[in-house]
Length: 471
Ligand SMILES: Nc1ncnc2c1ncn2[C@@H]1O[C@H](COP(=O)(O)OP(=O)(O)OP(=O)(O)O)[C@@H](O)[C@H]1O
Image 1 (cartoon, rainbow, N blue to C red):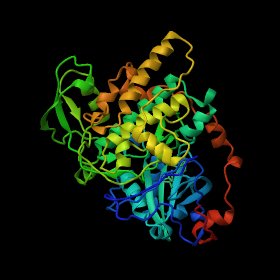
Image 2: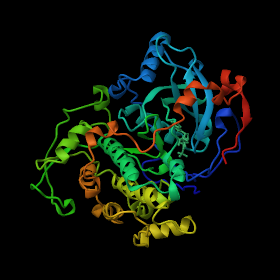
Image 3: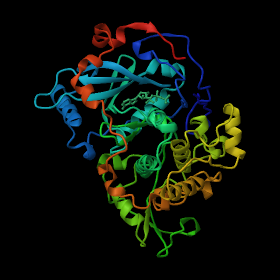
Image 4: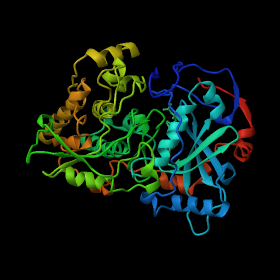
């Protein structure tokens, strides 16, 4: 139960405290609550939207098809076209609602969407508008099975609305509470960590440093696979893919000295050509292609924004990397640190440097050596797996970012670790996940469980004045 802090010095333009709250009255959409769990806060910079209507990964999805048809029929999508069903959650910058298209498309199933609604005026007062704009810009660029699809975006009055893929399975923080001893099994933790690793790999290739990995931000989709959410703390940078030549059969990635070959020309792409030309999206390869070179002995493709630097103090206390705390500048290696903290929390039910209070947690992150609690294992096989995962976590939680696993060659180094041996990276999205949300069918067939908003709110939500209670 921890709130996060933010100080901002480089990629964002304001140094205002993240916990400053305007004294204001707003409508239903601003009815935000704070501090339900560990939350994260910061500010970020505005750039033009890269929203793309070309989403190859969603080509056969009914929700995407319905949205395309709606756009074709109406010309422009707006709030009037949606029926809001209930609030799914709220965070530091907005509320998220479950919604449906008002008039279902003939021949298509009625689909659910998640609509994130941000009060632009309120955020401007709190100097957090740029965070919302950054999130919108980043979401518009994404097209990957483990990150959200932005189906539509529009403004309504002073609200900004993002219509995204809906995840009915909740988040991994809640899922962890359901596990025996509030800990995931090693195989479940491996599955989730592997999918997150692929999502981070994709983001890094797109020049996006995520910065806010924590179980609360890993949502579970209808099919049980994961979706990273919440991109308002992310930052964008340029990244140029490189081919690293390496000696054959070099298993120990830490001791390799890569030599940089000529930067790879951006010729392979799973992204739209319009995106490719824009700042921050010069990376041009697909995950599977990176996989295939990552396991061979030939040159390795590396698309890691190694030189990207930010000095913003952002994230969630227990997940902050040492270099974020020291304020000397941080880059994509923060995501590999957070992957280590995430794996630790999944397996041990707590984070590795948690102190009695936030201040002590931060000191521990900087000074305390990593230790692992003893947990009972049921078999020799499990013990073996435990040894491997602890080795991986130790390599991810190296305090010096330059020596951290992944900092040099990105995800390929981590994917090759013994713990992930046997993971079929290219086909992981076809593997049966540890849990598949069981109530999805109930949710679909029984509308009685869903609506929580009054008719008045649903019909004209932004006109209803309500108390503004951020905290
Ligand atoms: N696509 C989705 N499907 C289902 N629920 C979602 C979805 N997106 C967000 N939520 C729910 O809404 C909550 C708030 O969303 P989100 O974290 O994006 O808001 P935020 O204001 O950016 O939060 P933060 O304070 O962490 O930055 C989430 O914790 C989650 O429970």
